[in-house]
Image: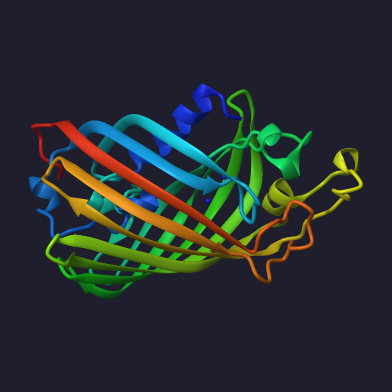
Length: 294
């Protein structure tokens, strides 16, 4: 989804908390170097996370927006619930099953809100609110060589909700199978390179949220449109990360959205079959618990 998409101050801060507390999931999910076991890691860590990027307003949008955030960074390694951390793939999860062959957990995702006044295609339409998703994830570890390389098949299904922080509405479901590959110790800079690719499928409610044009918002240039469930598009993410020490790491990457053949390509809100987002982020952990995780 960088998993995938208001502009009030509180919306930006809450979104950032969701992403940074999860360790910038798409960016840092690959940042899993050969680490000490959980027994030698602190129960919690606190620091600062920052993110900057230029991201499409929504899937297949014709415009992108610059985003920049600096917010608290939190990691918690409880017996069941896990928040952030490289060993947790940068996610918020409940640790149901984890072994050398597969994992099963619960994950969260988040997406930026969009002010329709700033998007030409959505002028005079309702804003797209802050989105977040929650659901199960099954991970098959096709190649698992800690400290060298990893190839995973991730099967993710999430319920998606929209909120303006005065109300909450269910916006359907997404299914996102993807392959994720990580290669460590690349070049003399000791970089970690990561990539992922996969399609996204969505139910009608979420498709309506992005692509429906109700008759009251129709214009000669923007005819009414009723969206359907089906194929939303595919994402390819490519990036690299660098760990400078135990407290500081940085990441640089990009995401290509490919929407050829998307179910709702005839919507007047569907503008580009290819979109590109670029981002940079860092995390500095400056405090931690003396109690180790179990």
